[in-house]
Length: 407
Ligand code: PMP
Image (cartoon, rainbow, N blue to C red; front, side, top):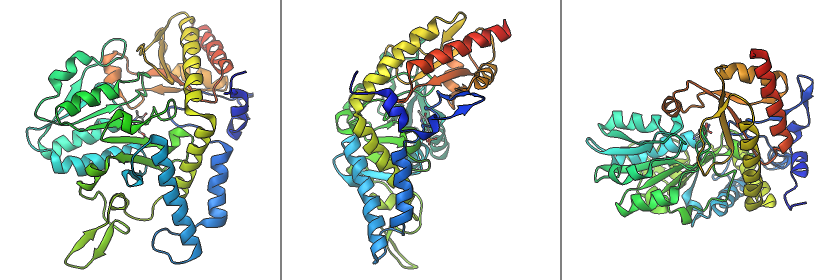
């Protein structure tokens, strides 16, 4: 038995111990949101039972404890992604807010008419729309790195797209629609050689393999708590200290100021400058618990489990007659997107649901990449550390049922 015992891991997730539609639950939708281990649930309950108070301004014991828990969570995140300094960790609502923050602060300050922002054709809408909005606000142009038929970036096109007009490269580490793992370290090196900063969307990567922002060298890295077995409504923007310090504030309110008169406002230091209002305290506490949980399993062991299951899942799905995988990149993780003959993905999802199998169907908030593959939607099974070969086998049996129904 390997050190990573998936059956033991499953016991940590109470939600998985249930039957739905009269069958054992098979949860294959973790790329949308992941389930929570008891340790995360307990940490949130404990916080509310013992430590809850508002942070930073209080002189009383509970406020001190809450502040310690919140700032301690920041340090836990710092360590998790190997950032240099806890001030480089900004708590936000999730990946979406992290990217909007960069677009509206860094972007509004540094992007002007005639400039360009470079993204890729496989981005989630969260890493397209904020840039499109910024371009509309500033008169800049959005440029796009193309994707090939495997679902890999066309790297040969990158050099020509990184020009003296490019103000930022924004790229996903792992595609939520295809599972492609992008070579973000290499892309960052190329961009930096031309003095262009890089934002990486890490929503789908931090759960699957170790991420080291210093090794990647990127300027910004964004991810969401809820996809990494933590709570909803909390996420992280990592930004290199010198970048964050050069950026104007995002939202205005409490905690992001040092002093306010009716004439003049002095903004707080980073990261507080970007955290207006009462933060999501229990979210940060739960996120730190999720990180401790991941660390207790070991990110390398998780990566190995995910790799093996992905290989098994790919082979198993390829054995289903009429099934076409959408996205066959050489480096893939977590996501098996597919179409089954000409059966609509929603019908596939609905029939699987009757078997107790949860997958996602649709465009996965990545319509441009669906357009590239000339499909309006796919069915997507996504794999996490609690998934097993038995889950994949159940999916395959379910897909045979779908074929029978439509046969
Ligand atoms: N980017 C990617 C690659 C994603 O998969 C997601 C979530 N589906 C997001 C961004 C947005 O994350 P959130 O909804 O948690 O802000």
